Length: 586
Image (tube, rainbow, N blue to C red; front, side):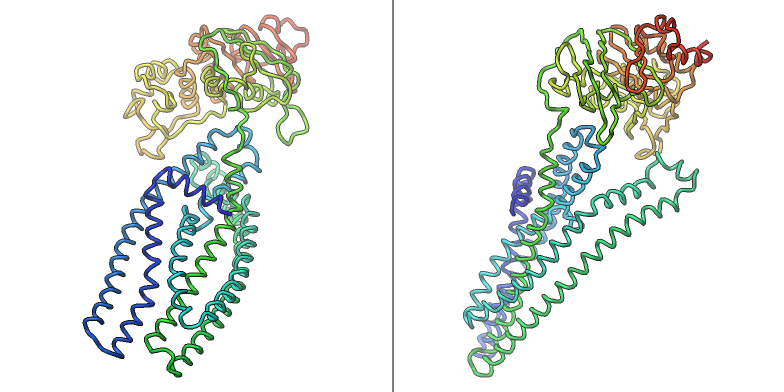
């Protein structure tokens, strides 16, 4: 039951000890206020009705307001300073959460089950609408309210211990109903994780520049709002069911509270009339009844919330401990080449599919070879590269680097050997320099040289801050909005700057015309001398620069050899496609 709380306290203490201490002190200081507010008025009233010793009266008054003032001031400090520390700790939790997301297997990011688990894990950290740290507040609230209960219980038993037991029975009955309502609400909340993701997705589209043109050109705004509303309606209906349960439980709790307070007041009035207690004691006991009810209810409610949200902790624990297949290896990659790549009987099937995307691939790529992987769309070319770059694991067979399964190598070290540019490359809202270096050491001269080499030299001269200009205008109104061709050149510069021994280009020039593509490949070919270069394209302009061509069809390599060899194959698919496209390369 307390695994989630233990997780919060352990990690909160690691990130900022004062955050935990401040929340504890805040609750302890405030736990004394109800006791003071219950006892001191009784002493003041009794003194006013009896001896009327003004010194004693003023002492009681100033003791009450003095403690309240000091407690209030300290609470303000612990509250606001604690809020700042809460934000810091929340950022650390988020960072750890995102770290696991960044290191998750690529295939997991395409799994709805994994994404739903991630959404539920996030609900534990933020407790739905309660916000970050709510469970920790619940735990601290339990501790503080227990101190209050001890003090108030000591007061109540002085009048009649049976009253204390009656209150306990009524409060526990009301809380049992509340517990059932909250548990049912949590189950309902878990069932809409997919709808939550859907709503967030549609809401994000309106602010995403990548989709802005399509939305406007196709007048999609109203339609998208309708789709967004469908998700929200399901979420809202779910919330209504949750609230219906809370309303019913609230009515029962109110009825139990009415019975409890009615019994208490009738009994205390009888005690005053019969002379058993003074007016001051009457005020103290009635205040004690209210304080006891509130304190015990808060303890039980907090315990229910802790227990309820523990259902989500299971998902967080599963998320944080999800095994990562692509990072399972720990073998050191050879520090120097040559690096030979081999596919041995490799087949691959996407999750949920009934057909292999790749079938019995056998190919050796010696170091320094320039391989052109060609074929029509859907032939398996990109899947071939996704396996080579460890985004997926082969369903059958092995991929070897210098005779060792690539999955046995340290993932980061292996990826350090590969520079890639995909057709669906992404640029970030960073400077052009950062988009090229991608967090690696910055050599400004080499950055400029690389950008000039791919054909962006003239463009840099026109930009306000040269290579320091931001890509896009998301954070800088003077940002640079690259065209499709310019964006691809930045992505190519990124691959060149990495200076890896293996370079993979997965249709990176799709936005260029054939002539520009040919010229860029010609230039790029000179940059990868002494490296292994793998070109993937449904256009065949890259093939003339390569030593070997692998023609993919229906997930298989059906033709393999040099350009000249494949052109001599009678009825060859490569020859047919090349002849059809050759008009663009004359």
